[in-house]
Structure formats: structure tokens, C-alpha cells
Image 1 (cartoon, rainbow, N blue to C red):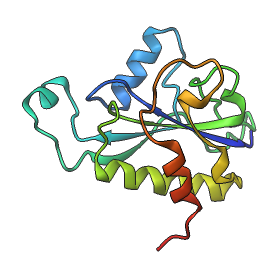
Image 2: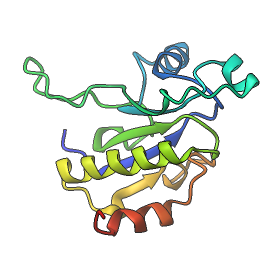
Image 3: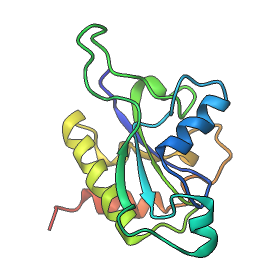
Image 4: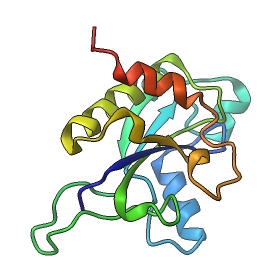
Length: 157
């Protein structure tokens, strides 16, 4: 698979980790977490969020989801399960949160997207929010994608 799109998602939860998302996705009948990467917000548990105890070690932490490395036996990468009709042509990143992302999360998001843009030769206009996929009615990722795409077009300073 050579992806031609990058799709940005949000967890629609105020806390969580890849372990939580993997569990939530398996409960929906998927084989595993649907995203290729998750960017944490520092609230690892519901109790952390309730108490306002954001762990700085986890704020902006980039965690792997489905594999993007070539599997020697299968000669294919793991297609995500994140955007119906787009999974086989895209890679996906999920921000933990509901539009209230931290500066660390947004910095890591830009770094990760730029890395995928270089690796797969994906232009900034092919970086989409989940809500920009035809037929999607969710607000996810609750992020101004035009601003993000504009930022991705600018040279790295």
C-alpha cells in the first residue's frame, strides 16, 4: 500500500491511550486499533482528566497503532480501519481529545504528518480531517484543517 492521503481523527474522549482505543475498536468488532498513530494529551485515565492531572510525559506522546512497516511475509502494510472507503489509500493519526488539543499535541501532529508527507510523497491538500470525508457527519477532528494544511505548506523553520 502506498497511501495517497493522511486522515486526521480525534478520539472524541477527553482522555485515553492506544490501549484504550484498541479496546474500544475491538469492542466494535475490529481486529485492532484502526489508526496508525495516536497522539496523547496527558490525561491517561478518566480519573486523571477528572482531577485535571495532565501527565507532562504523556502530553504530546506519539504512540504507534497499526503497522506501517512492510511485512516481509505479506509484502503489505496494515490497512487501517478509520474511514470507510478510504482505508486502503490512507494513513491515519488520532488526537486524544475533543478539539481542546495541547500545544504539544499539535506540534507532534505537524511533525508526524510532515514525516508521512515526505515518506509517501503526499501533498498538503491530501491531508484531510475525518469530517472532510464524504458521508461523514462527525465534527472529528474538531480542528481547522485549512489552517493545518496551510501550516504544512510552509517551510520548516
